[in-house]
Image (cartoon, rainbow, N blue to C red; front, side, top):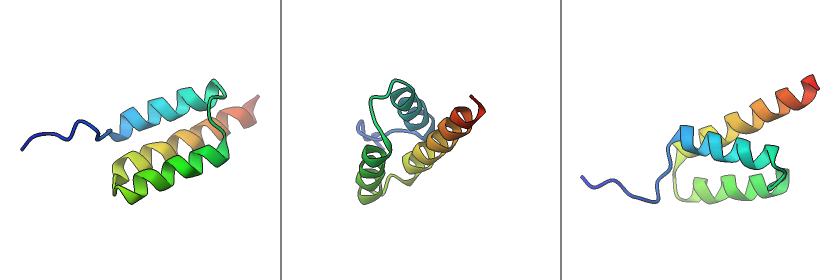
Length: 64
């Protein structure tokens, strides 16, 4: 079976989203749109990474 090159792992999605949130490249509205996109593609592993990155980001933001 050939791996789909457009598929991202949970870890890849977590890292990308967390970096984008920290750099203020994306906000909560855009994050919702990104999540919807991956849900439509049924890339639920990536959706998990997105959700965890957002939760981690919010936890860090609240500690400051």
